[in-house]
Image (cartoon, rainbow, N blue to C red; front, top):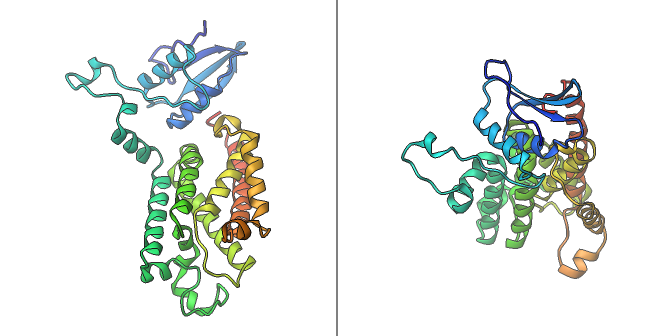
Length: 310
């Protein structure tokens, strides 16, 4: 049986001890998802889990027990609910049994992802309901810009246009597909990066994707969608899954192959022929390249800061 008994509370860090051949990746994945500061070291022929002071020890004990019973996996979710003695006479249903509680939990754990999706829905509503003011505000170039370069004088007071097109969607399936991808991959990356860094990631990749799209196809300045950020997330997660798998969402190789085929197909007439629509190829490519570069940047700083969340 796995030895995962915490040491004395008097110590500076609570620990769990495990044999060297124990795969701790499901436990580490869940600790990262919960934002529990920790590290794993090897001492005296064992793996030692060390927790930073001030962590929720009761929640960690519940995670250790679930791990010992084989109830954790890389793709599993885990919600810690206090025992009745801890909550007095309050009786509540498990979070997973309540749609409202699940939604609130998602907002709490991935607020940036939820906000981006909501703004994307607003952009779609503005376009589909012919809100000219909102539509023109979300374009990369203003109505009077006459397709001028990005650093032309008119841009100096309209820098929001660098980011704004990511919220513009042209159909319900456009925002639906992007929203589902954001929920699946974006929320996982957000839990790994934490909110401020993830927000910066989305802004940088969104802006890079928009600029790439504009300069690859300047004759078509009306474009939009979260897909540049989505492809950035795919690329970021792919690099982490390769180099730092304990902090990545485990996606099958077929998923990445399909994404590459979709990306390459965008540079052919296939989508225009089949769907009478043109893909934002520049945004997809620019976002993917930016996402991969940011992943390697993240790995560099992760490795040079002692890998605090090993």
